[in-house]
Length: 230
Image 1 (cartoon, rainbow, N blue to C red):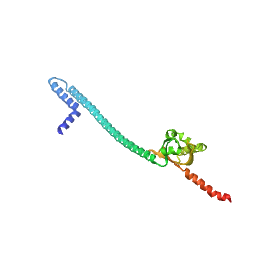
Image 2: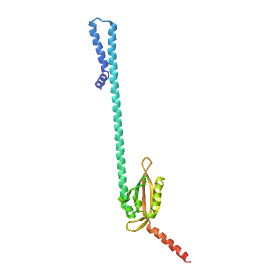
Image 3: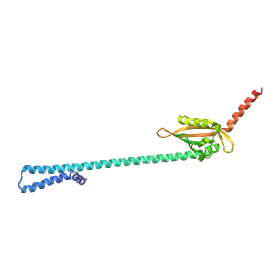
Image 4: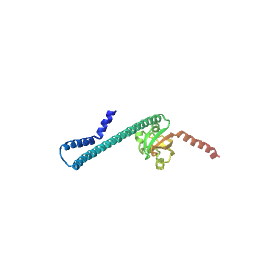
């Protein structure tokens, strides 16, 4: 430890030591010659001053390099920590996506996802069965083509109005399938938010209410018939 300290002291003050040694050598040889004392002192002072100033510059440069290295190492550590956080977040997101799609595939209701602009980006198989439309044909704004033509414009307007107003969507409407059949559905959607609290999209469901809807209409007709008969 003492040897290391002495070596470090020599490294930090090497030029000063050399300058002093140079002065001693100068005085030694000058003693052999005649000269003015003032000139000898001036030269000796200049040598020591030059060595001291130069050593100061070298030490300052070393200190700056050391600080720069510390800052670089600190930045590397921050990057590693941030990278680890992002990897963890991505892994959790992937697990959440896998879980969502797994649940969506076994869900008895149709599930859909919409982007922040209100355009469809995902539907599960049950949604395709109810609407009579495959996902590749439903993405974007095309999903609205499954809505009964008489209602389509009104439903689409209400849907995009809900998106623009950040309001939940809750409507009943009819799907007309390619095979000529139709069904009533209850469609509901609510906003999804990202970490910044901004709306990143919407997730919703459609439920086939055709039998319940027709049953309610038939019940109303039965309740109305006796009164009408009298």
